[in-house]
Image (tube, rainbow, N blue to C red; front, top):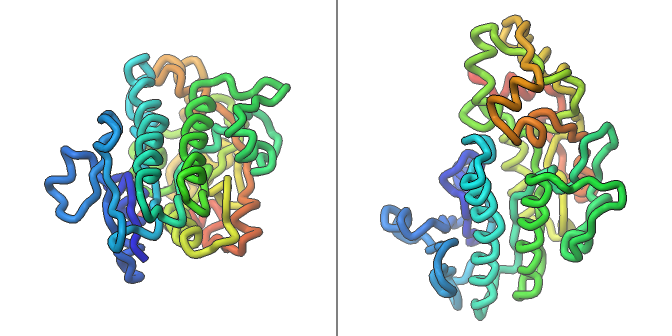
Amino acid sequence: MRVAVTGSTGLVGRALVRALQARGDEVLPVLRHSESTASPGSCLWNPDGPPGATSLPDGEDAVDAVVHLAGAPIAAKRWSEPYKRILSSSRIEGSRVLVDAIGRLANPPRTVISASALSVYGEDSDRILEESMFTEQQVRDKVTEPRGPGTGFLTTLARGWEREVYRARDNGVDRVVTFRIGLALDSAGGALGKMLPLFKLGLGGTLGNGRQWMSWVLLDDLVRALLFALDEPKLDGPANLISPTPCTNRDFTRALAKVLRRPALFPAPAPMLRLLVSGFADEGLLVSNRAVPGALQEAGFQFEAADLEDALRAAIPR
């Protein structure tokens, strides 16, 4: 299989590229023009450029699938208005440019798989989040639930992101999967990578009151799910990519402290988090996302790490 991958230099992208190559697939990184000169054989991607500035192989060299993982890091900086524009551009406008490039192909890929986020549901409650609660058609129709969730920046961002990706169906793509991803566990980066230094010093603790739900997935399972989606025609549309065992932040904190054999005595109150990371506190750290991977499991995918402590031990090298 020939697979084009955006975001191939990120945490998930690097792991996916290794996994694809290990099973014998041909990988074509989709890189920005500034990056592509250092990587012969890559595809060109210019999210900020004019139509035609992004190119994908066509004809006999066409790819079988595109995996779209690119996006500026959500928690890398405080949410100033300029950085929020960067977050939006890297996901919404970047996806629009990529899908438009697919539309110019005589032989478009049969499959497009894209990252998304659980924030698409706009939830902050104990309700279990299932894919049927916010379908592809609702995303495309810009439906907002009567209860009123979906007014935050991350929810608007995730819905706009998915909406652009689903347009690939209009451009000749047979199957579009949007993976609504939760907390990816890997010590090399992401949220866990940022937590580890404090927890290793015994300075970790719950975030806010600790009662908010966290939906997580081991990075290895995340990559396995991406490979599964490439091969499994039954998987189509939105799919929650998280383990089947969500936990509260308090339980996550206890499990991480236990695995590291360190105390976790220093909670971070909500006002302090809001001061430190502005809007990301309420929409990223304190929000409650209790989701289940219904679509993946119905398609036959099996998680190797469903126990939180086992997953943390696998994610953190000794």
